[in-house]
Amino acid sequence: MVRTRLVRAATTATTAAVATAAAGLLAACGSSLGTPNPGPVPAAATPGASSSISTPVAEGTLNGPQAQAGSGAVTDMAYLPGTPVWWSGFEIELVSAHLDTATGGLEVQARLTNTSPVDTNLGATRAEISVGSPDHVTAWDTVSDTIPHGTTLPSSLRFPSVPDDFDLSTAQLVLGGEGDHQAVFALGDKQATATAVATRPRAVPATVVISNAHTGARFESRDVSLLAAACSGTNPVDVTYVPLASDQLVLELVGTIRSPSRSVGGVAAQRATATPAGGEEALAEPGLGLVLGADAPPVRRLHLCFPLPADTHGRVDLAFDTRLVGEDFVTATGSVQLP
Image (cartoon, one colour):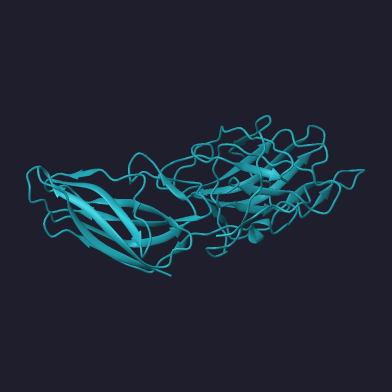
């Protein structure tokens, strides 16, 4: 996947801020896998900015670029509704932006939907968010409100000290650091959400069934996709999505594991792997370590996430190691076909 850089606008007021910090915003738009991702060069962060839940600007309050009285500088933008952008587990839709010329602060309001299976927030596991051009950076505070999974809430990104010559009309909001998959919004465009550059999750039409005749363990998934984000967590059920290098994609299988145990001690699942044709084996993340007791209920919404090269196509072989307690592990296999 080719990554491009932010291009500085042809204006004398383009030396802007690129804000980096631990944060998370989901990013997605209608672009397909393989869409180039601009890559700004983050500089050392300057004083922090904050992200917090706030009430969005009332509809109709701002109808487009607004200039400060007595100057030609754009200080306010209102954004038209658009398909939310997916990035690192969040769907994002910009609402408005306001530049306070008296304090030098910038506030971007957005609606965020947490698509992770657990409650999380922007500062939990995500690294870099930036605004402006590659020439300056303004950090935002990592403190942010937790958004329950499956919930949409208004939120604000605040950058308290952008440069004096910051130009809202040419600035870009960039989610993700250099070398990562990014979502890039043109803050001077009323259709910033609709025109954002990002890599949206891509569904893979497949049903994957891996059964182990010896142990009786069976994994089944009808929810297969390619993601421009990695899976993180302490177990394969409660995962969040975090930034991923732009030369990789994650093959995610969300499914159920069950076992009619043939041992009083139950069945243990140790690891799962994916191997592209002619490629290297990839271990499932965040790691697999389950023990299903005798007559235990199935474990549902199990996430098997395999980091693969971004240019992977065709057959990917899958392997799942399980064992009866007290015995050696036995491998069962399956496969999935990628477009």
